[in-house]
Image (tube, rainbow, N blue to C red; front, side):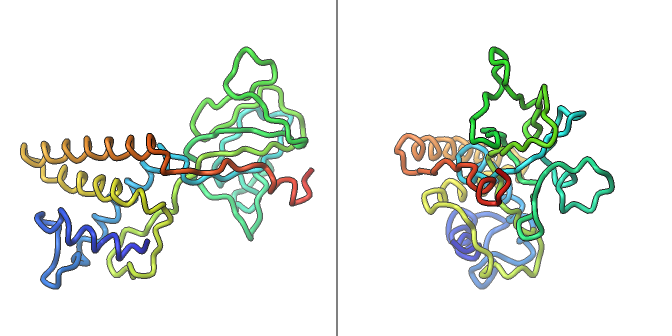
Length: 235
């Protein structure tokens, strides 16, 4: 779906009755683009956090004197940062980006799935924060494939944006919950008792819509494997 399509749904839906709604041509006024796109970004992040919409992986090379591996672009090989502690093996063709939401699985070079956050297992790795991998006993120069739930690419929240050229990469079944989330955020900005009640109602509606989608099994996402590590000849 294009961003312009989402704006059309908003303009002819609930936003038509709100102050941030349509202009005299029946569309969203350009002055409201930054506000609405900010709400859309938050809605997309919420959906990507709660549902397995996008998964990616980072290949890290262990260092004997390092047990904590923050998955941030400053530690990527392609980063312009100064120092020799860059441990994320990326490339200019596919640079690592700061889109980690949750670390989910870890594989060794020999395609062995390692336990995660399991103190009962001697070889368990840990995640002290959402984007940091802890390796209690690192093996120098050994590779690990870190599979993680990834965030969407942030939409530029600015005026003058060509909304007909921006694609929203989410399943069609999630468009309605996204609209509900956005309208709820707009209502909350009213800062009065009525708008607060409206925002709460939209939030409740959003939660119901998500649960219905989850329970119906309408959303299916295949789990990835660490094939990229193998295909790049790092094994």
